[in-house]
Length: 93
Length: 377
Image 1 (spheres, each protein chain N blue to C red):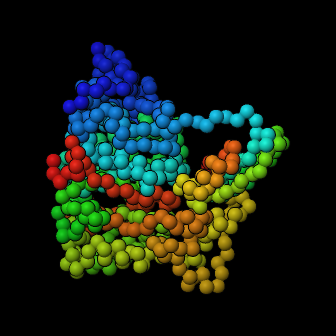
Image 2: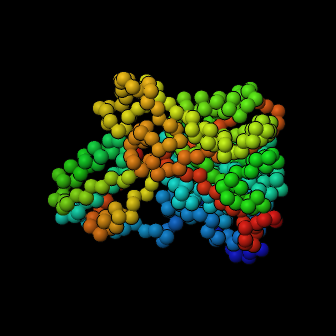
Image 3: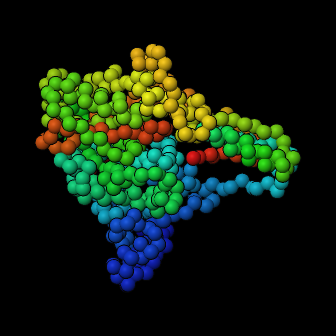
């Protein structure tokens, strides 16, 4: 008999946690960080239209990352943290 | 030697052969059999770097994953490494989890994968191949260290085709992209050029598109040799970034005879690699994203008067970077790393193309077991 080890790992639970999910988007400010990918802004706009049909969403903060391969600059992240209830980001192709 | 308990789940297998099959069944291997990692074997790897099992080697925030020494040791043992390789593997993981490397680019359709270049005395002590058949397969150190990083990211960062690896063609460097530089020539090795002491051992990670470009360079002057490289780079992918050029010791002798250093080589390529706007338009890649065409059917732009005489320089921040659609593209570095290798028997040079969007190369010193940057072990 041989004992061997599992080489995998899952998410570092407790290390980073998801923010609480809002029960409704009524009145919520929606942040958007478009990563700059071509047509991503169009797809996000479609998503916003769907949200507008379902909820009475508040203001929309639409921002573009300077470059898709880099993390969004601190001012954009700080603005989202301060003003947006939820943030839509991450469009690939 | 650490007595701390390991965190990994233990699984029972009747014998080695059943254990090998178990890793296939669980999807924990890349298609090749693994060396079954027992606790005794994994502890030898931790001792190889004098690390506790829970030592944090690197973090991948994008995947919310933490790479501990134990996870690295398990995957390195599976890959067939020797325990002595652990300090080099630790430096390799530190390099690709450095923020400058920008791990998130690894999910690209372009199939980027890091090539690792080992410099300094450890490369020779651990018998990394820096000579003939550089990209192998040749030496155990090269082959198993490449596989160790591949398995680690396969098992701990979902870097597999059914996970985050969305590359179109895949990347052979995943199996062979761990090499050393031949440091026996007149030229300073890469880590010295980058500011490290010659006696320090380092690992440099460079994110690459798949493919090694081999060039027949029969001429006998520095300019003659490099004009072939200029020609190829100027008509290739033409993405700004840090290219790595591989030069054989035989060619180094030609350059050195004419007083050329690696810096001269870099500057020569920097000044001459260029392409006309007309060529880029004919290729269909001029203004692809910036112009936001309707649909992806045809990006071709008409060649206008003056385009034949208008040039874009590969290594300079340039107008063509608008292809990558954002001013931030200009922030990434451009350079030429010159690395000696490939043995003394050929008249071919070779180069590799960097992942052209965001990743920058990262170099990390190899720490000796027990701390400190190793001069020697």
